[in-house]
Length: 241
Ligand code: PGA
Image (cartoon, rainbow, N blue to C red; front, side):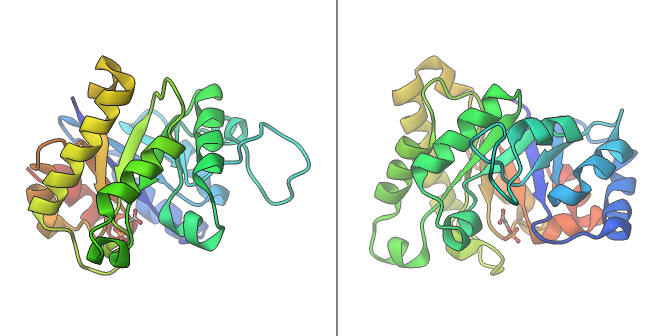
């Protein structure tokens, strides 16, 4: 399976910055891995235009579970698709925390994404306290059970909350254990189809640690925050072997 290197810019990127990050990606020849960037919603159409015809796909960072309606400020999956997106991240821990998103809502968002022809990237991950208390597998197992719809056709991202934006990454052993656990859960629920679901690792992925993390069994790629804001770092991660 080809690994997917996805970058999320979070709430970063005015027009000039978006152009500066996306333009060098256009010509980047990356062999053997798929690339995706998820700009803020206001930049999706512009970035999709810059990257049209390149090997880099464009995604959203969230979508609503409805296709349209009276939901001020929200953006639907068909709108993302219309703007040029092929993927959408749902259930990122910052959405779970800042917007109190529940597994039920995230499952609805994943279903909306699939119905709109987008590939959802569903995020799961335990907090630092949950890991200290030895509850990481229980928490992630519950998030998977609640957030993934039946017949799930998408990507899962394991992002330990304590590793996001902190410069601390999980050890390769911890990543191996959790990815093996997630793989087991996916196969148990989805059978053979579960074997083909990519499981990304996210949380302080950098050029310096990417090769080691991407070599861990059942790691299907990376979800990169901070380091995706510099094209050169993002490309270094994508090239890490
Ligand atoms: P980070 O963010 O790479 O800045 O830690 C990762 C993420 O939130 O997906």
